[in-house]
Length: 634
Image (cartoon, rainbow, N blue to C red):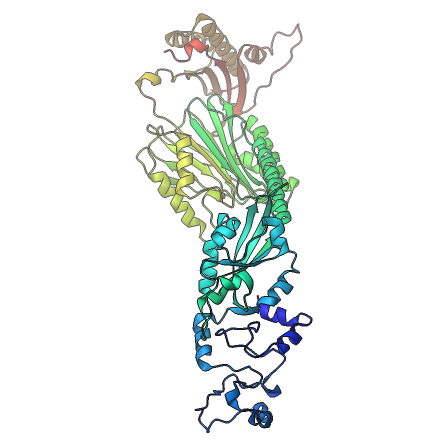
């Protein structure tokens, strides 16, 4: 801030300075108290001496004056130098110039009278202080209107107490020492009707010609200049409107983000399914601080007969469009899952649907199925990250194959893969926001995830939710993460002796013939009685067994098998055979003698369903919910 140049441009300022006697106190000074600069419009060619020339009597005659100085030589010879006149009183000595460089060459000087004339016209609050204790030299009317009138000569700690409360005094000390302007932004100032916000800018200046009380409090400046002539100009800029607007903008963005996150979460499962044979936990973290939402999603879908589908996907991009595509894909997955199709067929159907929804929208998906009667997971992937399986011995396996291109590409035949998942194992499904970073390869993130999962406790000493939180911490997912993150963790616990009795199973191979149905009824009655089921539930289970076996004998073919299974929450009756024609529920007329078997099963069971087997044939099953008092008994 060059206040010297401002003061010299004011109307009448140059004339007043020209009329001031030599050695006057109102000159613009940058060195000692009796040293002054020539005005900017008067150069050496107009009679001023060369600033680098030594005018002392002992000057070496070998030094010649500049051309502009020689033109004024006749006039200077007619005036004796003993009279103390040095070319219109504008001499500078080399010692003062050296002191100026050491005391602060970056500090500008201003005329005391120019202060009142210039700063009095500024509509913003301005204060001028000087000396080590920052004594008040001047405050303009705008400053007095905001903070009140101030007495010149009072130290700032007492005279400008509002600056001390705002923490401005240490900044003023720093500005005075370094000679560098500094600012303090958006400070609240209490007002009579409302609070205001000001940005304070402190600029170093050198004061000359102090008058009145301010001059009385400053020690006299020596010929080489002293620190007491250094001052600080405090300029307060009213930024209340900007601060209020920024706060309103932040509040609006916060509301929009809250609405976006609410929309995103409403598209995710509202209640986490907990299968009988698995413990499942999921975590979703929205990324970024803007109102845009991502397309990460997950789902846990009961398939019946104790089987469970676990799904995770990611629609690339952010915004309402990505969320809308994600919602459509999630709904479609649940519809396809009810058909109990193999994983690769579900992915194949999703591939075609994604191309119809938006061919330009890239999406990935992984669909896995867990069957409690098997020690593995069956899965299919469309461009998604692999499944991480932590075995009971603590080692981690990545199920990377098979995988296909992302959804919507078309022209690809997806296939299903198998990965071991024995009791005591833990599986993790996640989106790329957990492992992908802009400054690192994704393989590094996958390795970090594998390492974090390797060091986690086993299923007997932790829970899936603790694993989710551990992974977020290990991979540095915090509030400022720039991408959405979805994690789905499932554990298959090992049953101890007390709980193992609640999870039992029994199977019977049916050879066909007229004795197959009575034999199946007798087997079911004996097994259910050994499981200490109530008589009503045992009779319903036997009736369902009889109808399902009779239907299989009439419409199916060998091999046929009856399987009974109980968990801590339900009884499952399942019959398999080698025929692939799925039975459907009919509505027989009153006079019809056949077609009522499936209708009877649907009427007495909590749920029922059918599915094709991977190796050929079909399965027809029925579920019965256990009474509450029997869920924990054996």
